[in-house]
Length: 454
Ligand SMILES: Nc1nc2c(c(=O)[nH]1)N[C@H]1C(S)=C(S)[C@@H](COP(=O)(O)O)O[C@H]1N2
Ligand SMILES: [Mo]
Image 1 (spheres, rainbow, N blue to C red):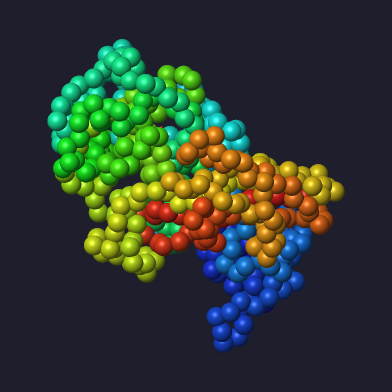
Image 2 (cartoon, rainbow, N blue to C red; image 1 turned 60 degrees about the horizontal axis):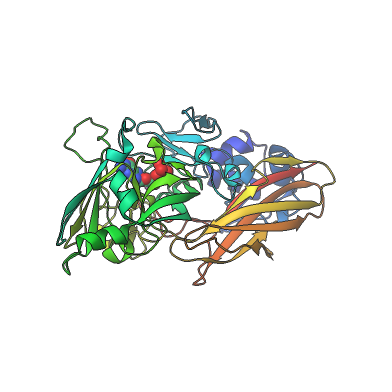
């Protein structure tokens, strides 16, 4: 490496990882290949992360050290709008943990840092928030809330929440709810939308009735192939005639025994901010299908086309596209099941451990949309070698799977711990967000945390 580094490595990595990388690793003359992490580069990164890097020889070029990516989402701000790196904005909302991070203010969107997802059941105060429109006022008389079932059914009807509770058999299941955009911040170039890291997900105990039982009571006609969900939240513009979000699912998904109309969360009445008094819970699929403040389900004879169903919203590229290119709408399909993901929930990213610490107890969670998780592996040497974690069974289908592992560290220093889950069909989390698409769905790279020993 020649010359001295003109800005802090940290700043350079956040703004322009490629240039930082070239400065640190050098470039082999006449090629595009990285050189070696030379002593000056190593010293600079070591100084910036706060310790020696025992596995530095395996550090991949282009990698923003997890210590720098911390608290900010991995994606650097686009070159056109160089924002000074600022810390996270913490949520200040009644009944919510102040550790949640606001990633959108209008509408209100807040994610849960991975280390706050360490509970087997995500407490309500730590559960992420995603709104597309205005938050409605709390219902005064929840049991009088009316839901209408209509469209391609033999007997359309209206039912109050009170009747729903008394006429149908209730069930409680622990299931993951995950925003379709979870992981969006990991895309390069930056994808548009709320810059979720991994915290647009939580796993709660949901109480309600099977959506299938209610639809069967209405008698879905053979022509009824898709649902359309409607709600009481007003569009951000304030126009009462403009729906905020109205998504739907294939009828087969609606009929699964775990697809529910719910009024209870962790044994409490469903809070207003989570769609109370009553919402849908369509587990495994993009969270947007789980309509909050549910007022109507209409059965359709074609794919639904409400806000959130068209263009590139909640859609993935069928044929891989050039990252950053303009999208061809014909090349997109609806995002249904969410991809496999794992998170390390303890220790927290950036943890400082006492000098001499050699055993680290890790805890995490993993889930895979409609599928289950087959295995979780951990690496402390930038992916050179992997160790299997102990994976627990889900309580019921769509529950997340907790995992634990004990790591042996060879020395003091700066380490990155990586976790990688594999789903029941053998698909693994990739190294970087795959299959770039303009609205950033399906971003499920390894989770990485930084720990400093000594
Ligand atoms: N009525 C309504 N339902 C909605 C939304 C919304 O904006 N309005 N957002 C959806 C999205 S995108 C997600 S990820 C989940 C978030 O649920 P939560 O806020 O309870 O975590 O609700 C879904 N249901
Ligand atoms: Mo979402």
